[in-house]
Length: 75
Image (cartoon, rainbow, N blue to C red; front, side, top):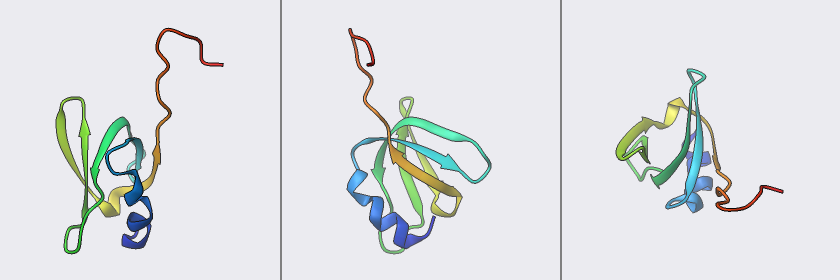
């Protein structure tokens, strides 16, 4: 992901997202804390109770995850 693309997803900061990484792995249902600023080249995620910093160059795709529906059916 380029810095330009990172600027486009900045609107997702504070939301629950899924991240696809260059090595083929994914980080699902994490919070996008920050998508990097000025000299920073990492994405700050909060996942499973801990902070994770992922190099922006390792991010292939990032999208907002759908909210989990509790107590009903997903129709």
